[in-house]
Length: 339
Image 1: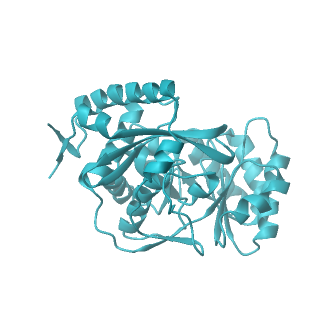
Image 2 (image 1 turned 135 degrees about the vertical axis):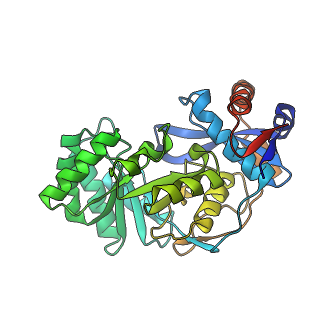
């Protein structure tokens, strides 16, 4: 049964806007701003990146409201395996980045960064392979290559033993072409779709097109745990649960999704709190021996105050919340009736 969409005033009254420092640059930022909401069922996180429009951001708000006002489905498992994440750092920085994650069995490495070359990517991946000879390695290009560049790069990087390549090119048609060319060349790299799931009007189109071997699902961009579960079920492809550079509040929602999937064949990209210099809770959701136990988390009032965003940034986020709430109310998200 759908829940009532909370009134805007209720969300505004519960809102906390924070700005958290990063240990290393990720997505070009060293500060991660986010808006946290406290509801009767817990905390939710609303943190679409600034360039996202209100329409796309409404799915992020739906996910935050689901967490705080509806709650999560019953879990099927209580320990979630996670990968380490290595940003597009220099190869010599790789050991320090990996050290923050502790023991892990899988690593996701960012590649195709603007201003870098394939040689930089290869050196970074090779540094991870040297540090973790037995680990599963996957690379994430965030659509940064064209088809020819992707085929060349993945041909070279496959020598390091890749589990899969995430979103090597921007389009679904391009993913299908890369997948075909790699198969023709005998290059053993699976293709994972991320942006081609969460940023498409039809998140199932990539599966219908046969353009990927697996899909990456993120709770906030897809509009909540329940909607993500539905998409995975309809896609009929293996799924990897990942994060959107969330605090522990958002990671809790990702863990809820991973805990509810019928199968979980891959380690999840939910270890990104280790990239933050500080979190909003005193007991952050970080990996212990390659996994995160499923548990609730609550922001600490002192940390919310310490990392409170400036007045002008708080106003910016609250204005955004007002606009996006209007979109969510207008679009009749399937999780909510209108109050």
